[in-house]
Amino acid sequence: MSQSLQQWAGVGEGDPRTILAVLFTDIIDSTTLARTVGDRTMFEMLVKHFEAARLERFVVEFDSFEIKIIGDAYMAAFRTADAALQFALSFRADTGDPRIAIRVGIHVGPVRIKDNDIYGLMVNYAARLSHVQVPGDEGIFLSDAAKTNIESEYGNTQKHFRLRPLAETTLKGFPPGERVWQVITPEIQKAREKRLAAQTALKMKAQVTSAMNQASSSILTPTENPTRKFGLRRRYLVQGRPKETIDPRKK
Image (tube, rainbow, N blue to C red; front, side):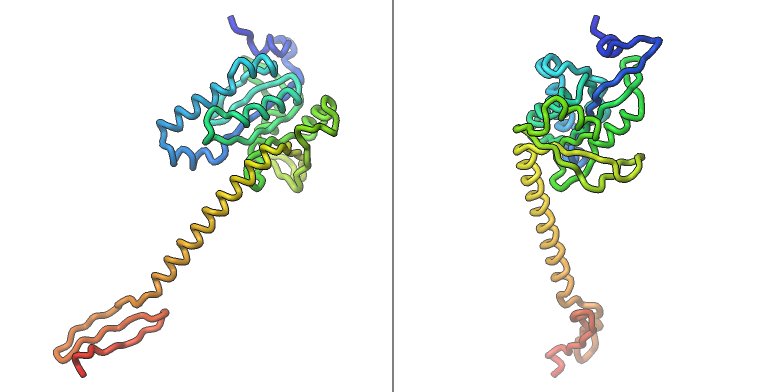
């Protein structure tokens, strides 16, 4: 019989409270991706994606407990924020399919456990962190509590990653000005630059297409073609102003 969340967290029915690190993932532009590849392929990609998250090496190395899958989001609990961060770094590096990129939110705080699920305001907070928007989209985002937990374990001079505060972050349902931290690694920075370049190229393509459409609309467009016995007259719109031309046969 598999271990329950209550057993893993060490809580009982009498007092279901404990402190955990909670992690949420979110697939970037999942709707656009699904429209591009179709339902069948997207389903296959999601299966591989969640299989990657469940690999035994993740479970053993990071001592985590899968809470549930919510659409294309993955939710898991960890004993510490530093373990959650290491999982996030590994998972975003191999999401199960190279077309899938993720954002990750991590928060630490008190929860209540019931029927292999967790409850509490901190769960909502962790979920909101996975939807933080930054240029280039990709990233791992931490609450102030998670950042403190991680620095307590690794110090503030970690060589493999840096923690930078985000300015003016608003999390839906929470007061403005919440302090949120982003994890910066060379891999995350490179992925952001690649996505920004792709977004810029798409924007430029859309601008060129729009300009071409506007140019084509300014071409002479016949608005009237009355036929007369001794000649044919047509009226045109030239740059938005009518102009009359006389059929040369009348001359």
